[in-house]
Length: 282
Image (cartoon, helix red, strand yellow):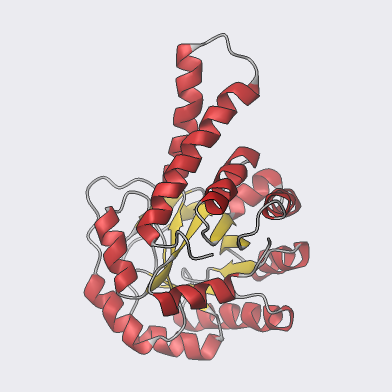
């Protein structure tokens, strides 16, 4: 069933677990994520970035997720990940997305507050939750460039940001990055602890693909309520396709290799749900 993220993240915060949020690129990845959620009785969030939206369209991905969600009895949300403008956020709202992220983290502190507040105010009448980001998650994924410089979230600023914007969740920068890591990432978990002391709304961890499971679990213990996974899902789907084509290079039916890609993604999603502690929480 289609749901918003507000209640599922509040329950996660109260229950000291996190909801897995998975970026999807096609029908098979949507099916894989929702099937894993249904089989594991887990709430789940499916996400699309601006470049994914550009590739297929907000309406196309919404229709895919809505159709999949209507087949199961666990809460399924569709979330705009890293919405890069007020206009795109409003388009997603009108299409029917049940959760919106506005990412003004590359702007100044005041400009980030302004655009985040505008989106939160616009979504409030429809009771659609809004995620924002303070600090910059590093690396590069899709067309998202984390940039350079001092990128970590300042705890005091985070408290002010949450109060002035009215957003319902906050993505924090504590050392994760989008895309693949060259070495083992080192997260500033003490900074996360300080942010949690000041910020009452649910906290979000971006760039979790490649972060050791125990580190993710510790971040959840310290207050993370939503964990984003993207790159690992793409790798899993591609590995499934490559396996079929390597073993049977004459295969021409997309259902044959995409079906294997789907199974690879489903297995990975189940494993990440175990890490997040959200299995059996629906």
